[in-house]
Length: 318
Image (cartoon, rainbow, N blue to C red; front, side, top):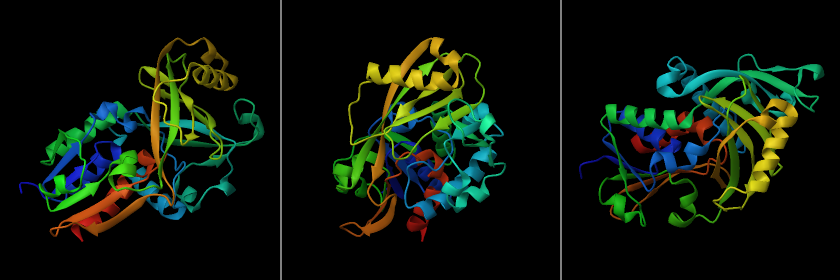
């Protein structure tokens, strides 16, 4: 065997886990069925915020650990894709958040008159906003600098990577439903609209975790990302034009200039949710190998990536 670890899955969770392991001195290869730009991670709006993720208490700790890392990466936004950007979470109150909220510097309640759009409650914050195509490329470069590599390769059975390394880390996201198999894994479909930015510099969200419709916009380099949806169990890969029009209309109720912005494209991603929340656990493989599961991050894979990667790495290195 010429590797210590095979990480299966090349999205943000897989790449961050691979970087964490490689920088601990292990020989790491990532096997990914899809190129990074075709993963669910590449579609993510990618604002740091613990959204649709369980278990809540552990996720809060993972999120704060990741927040510290993103704060460091924001020193070089052109390289890492990470920027500090101010914005507003409407329809959100401090009392409704977990203990992790105390670790977010500058998070504050807004007076009703300062909440944008048709909302009367909200929180203001300055948070990391990640340009995912740039960030995924940066993660791969950091992995390669640590001696790791990424290969396009689909996995049908765990015996395949186990023949190449004594440790296999399962970061397959939604594919864990069939590969593990885990019947608790289910998609939560998200649809986005990309438009020319009419001059908006702050992000905005109004995302009820219990609703299939959300409203948000994120200013990314060269585009404004509009969202969105959170359709549990839906797997349609093609954008729905009716849904797209509704997304634009909801965002325009907050910032009217969005209504006239030229549409650049549409995106659909399937968030890998799981009943019971994130699974980070290990089990033996036939022949003496070790399989570490690391999936089920729902809509917050970017938010918890570094904290979860450290936890998964502990199961690998002991």
